[in-house]
Length: 406
Ligand SMILES: Cc1ncc(COP(=O)(O)O)c(C=O)c1O
Image (tube, rainbow, N blue to C red; front, side, top):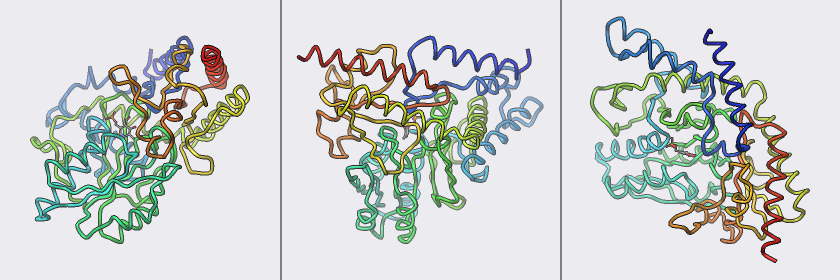
């Protein structure tokens, strides 16, 4: 069987696996690995096992594959291949951007570099800023958001200082899908001469993202959000941006990240990037947006006046993300009542208690509303049938919950 045939067989196996078990509406948490991605990486675990830095025969194929993968990732976001740095996770890419800029600034003599971020960032960004504060002497400002989850550009303007070296504000939020006004935030940042990093883990591959059009200096993208495996990501570093490595050693990745490259996973990310580009041209965002809005409508029809949208209408947002609160329910109890659906809630369970999502809380929603939230996220294998099954399962679980409350 050729690689192409194997990929087709695996592709149907993946969708079959999703059909046979629970309906998967948790694509923002992680995506299934596309079988075409699996097929592309396997030869680099076996036949082409060599070190891409080796000058001999065994190094050649891995080296060529790495070059190709870098170009594929670059093409998805309009970058040059030399501007793509492979990392082991999105968290590492975020930390490299934030801590790398701060330590480079400190090394060049700035006593207390200032970093600005905002409250609904992924913990990877918030923790990297906190680390820079504690260990590298940085000062950090965390901006608030409005009821739609958006940063006010005037707040950014007021927070900028002569010592501000970096602004890190995400492109799309992982819980709500809301898109920050990055173009406007960038314009303000640029006028102050600071660098701009955006965590685009959730937007790259879902909507067109072009680093030149956006004008960002640093951008994070993540493999396991675009049908590649977990454990591979990339940081776009614009030509000329000064960054210290988190890990030094053998000088791989242009000196930004030491360690023999993970060629199979880089190949996987390259293939995933190429497939994502094809999806974008084929209208996948519109298909997902249609299914997402259908899911919203199906829920509204089954549960009249109870379904509240948490990622506001009229605000730019990702096509595949629906975040709702169903009045009078607990998100955890609803999902527990529909085991045939895999989705997320607006809270995390710590030591047996449910902590409300900091993202929805920062938007000003009351705790009860946040604890009632469901995050339903769609992707490549989501079908109309999934949407109808999910809406029916949720409505059934809500009715069950309401009855047991009375
Ligand atoms: C917005 C955002 N940034 C960063 C990350 C972290 O990526 P990783 O899990 O690869 O560290 C995630 C993953 O959930 C994310 O959604």
